[in-house]
Length: 290
Image (cartoon, rainbow, N blue to C red; front, side, top):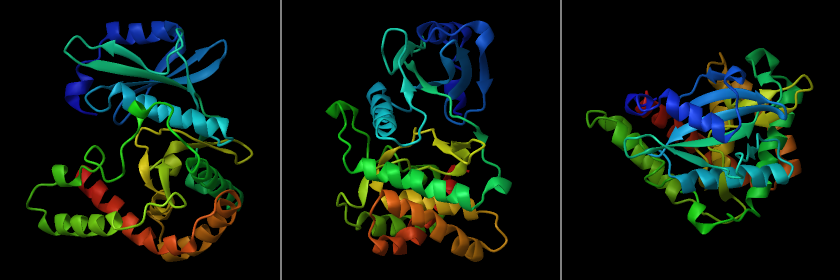
């Protein structure tokens, strides 16, 4: 987390956020968060997650666009952690930080189950994974943002791509590769059958699994308008990472994943050839971030 943002949070701000979601002091605990403060809390109506992000990262309208998308998916039968209202009926609650900015508070239903361990990845789980992503993409084809002011940005918008800003100029080879890959991906068509709202980070670290291998996807903070194959490439990038034989693992994983994905969503098989390019984009993005 940006130290400048972390330094702005104080107990007064947290207490105000808790008040707006009717959270008692003994029913909240801090969890790990990379770009936001994440808390787990419990009320008589269930278990939830409270997220405190900062306005220097996302505007209130961008977060409204995120939760609008999440709740559209939930209403359409996708297994996602839906956003919940504050006590006065808002999906986003801004709290002034006293320094000219705001902490933007949002709450979500707590996903069922627990984090996925690599040892749990079996055929049943992979098939459910494919169906979940396919359902999300099918719903993206009919999604229309509730308020035009809430529209999220595109995958190649300046708000999303930070590799060139993060890498020093001495990383000339990586920058050259990044620009080449980005230019290729920008040339791809953007028809509705292959392009729409995507999660952009739907790896297993953002999924919980229950005892029946049912999955729930969460953390839509990076959702953008992008190519559906980008989501699939991100799934493959992370599940194959660290495997002793990534090619063999891919040969097992992808047919299972796509078998149920195709039950939920139609995607032209020609898009599969773009997976390596989107994987390369993520590789360079991580290199820049780290």
